[in-house]
Image 1: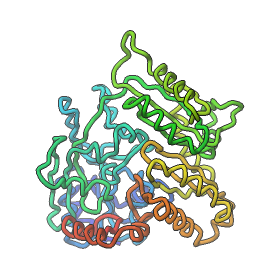
Image 2: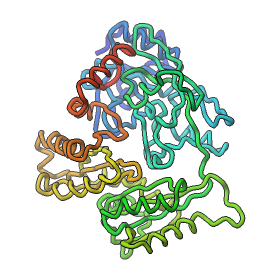
Image 3: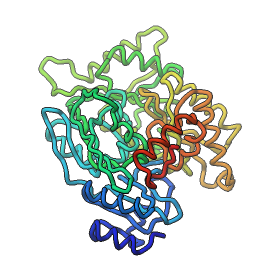
Image 4: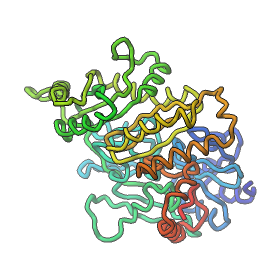
Length: 473
């Protein structure tokens, strides 16, 4: 455990509000969003970049390992301490003072501790938003460290695409502050250093401030649940939608029958539009949007969507079997209920994988065909971002299954799924959740040695101290 003299010294640096040591207060920082839990005797809560720098410098000088923690909503054990009790958590939850909106530049400069919901609430009155749509409510620093994607990646891209600049504290004996807060969208004057800190789980430095690109808040939306003629018709349907709707298309989310049924079971108030309540094998949530208010004489978005669907229905070998155009809040309520619904079915073993768009359904169909023979008690409840190639490949095991008594079961299952995803379908073992302890072994397996050596060199150059839960070297 961390020596009391270090705790006293850090209390002198950060003040009483900046240090947490009581066991009852530590629990929230020790417990992750999904099953993971560690131990710590110290949480640091700096309120400024300068305090982060001073605390980090002290910890590095005295050999104290640090785990940066943002909103602690990650799903791969990247922001919680290990079981040793020797790691201190450095939380961003007090970094919420700076907020500078630039309407002309359509950007915002802010501290990394703001939650996504707080950011968007402040932006709404100006008709703007940060266009990363998530089921959770993370802090911005964690979103940058994991390069979050979300349900509207198809139109707006990920956090990397929407990050203009950063301020970062390095884990060296000086607590060096790198000011990379460029407000420019075009700047080709050398290495784009901020990208080292995006999507790398805080291993190279702690993001304390950032400059973000903003988008106009949609003023009109139309949504529909689409039933493809078969799994093989999902990608032809997507191509047909893109051809007819272009930049209007903002979401194309796939939902398997098992996942949708789990959502309906968990949230009985959800509206079931399917005939007789019978959920199809696969359902697509499609959304189109405009950023301006309705104009006189302009075709409504509902009409635009219905017209496009009617054209697709008339195609030879039409990829569409059925469609239900409905209110966006009802349609999205179903999508947002999937995670909790699946989680309540039993023990959840989740994978966040990605592929070329054309391989998603082939991978899912392959796994569903092979699963009964390999792991007969496991139910596949997949859903995900078909428009950008990502899929949340969720596997559920009944709580009374004998598989849960087998200590090797989960590791065998994970090795098989990742082997198929990466080796057979040439996908990624982490689409948008980054690495974390849960994915460390697969980074070690699937990353070429040369790239590991390069990453280790960057770690030594930027943050030689003990920082983060991931080994990139």
